[in-house]
Image 1 (cartoon, rainbow, N blue to C red):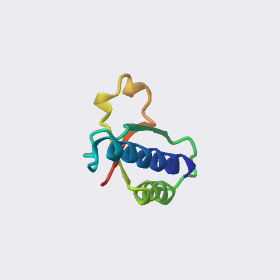
Image 2 (cartoon, rainbow, N blue to C red; image 1 turned 90 degrees about the vertical axis):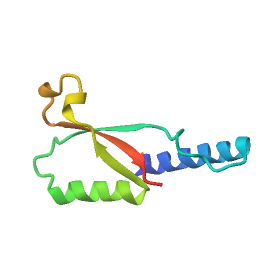
Image 3 (cartoon, one colour; image 1 turned 135 degrees about the horizontal axis):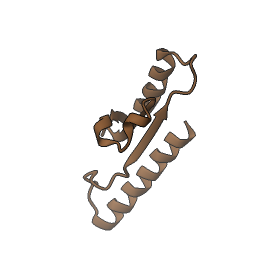
Image 4 (cartoon, rainbow, N blue to C red; image 1 turned 30 degrees about the horizontal axis):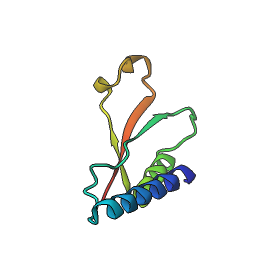
Length: 90
C-alpha cells in the first residue's frame, strides 16, 4: 500500500510540473510505466487474497494489465511468475 501511495504522489507531482510548464492538463502520455512482477510463493494464498490486492490497485486509480507470457523472455522457466503493467485508469 505504501508503494501504491508513492506512485500516486509521484503522478501528482508530474501533473503539477506539466501544468506549471504548459498551463494545460497533462495528456497522460508522460505517466510513468510501472511493471509488477508477481510470483505466488505462498500455497495458502487464496484467490480472495489476490482479488483484494488487485482491488487495492484499482482503488489507487490503476489497473493491472497482464503481459502475455510470449512477451516475457524465458517465461517457460518461470511459470509461477506473472508480469503486469500498472496503468492509470484516468
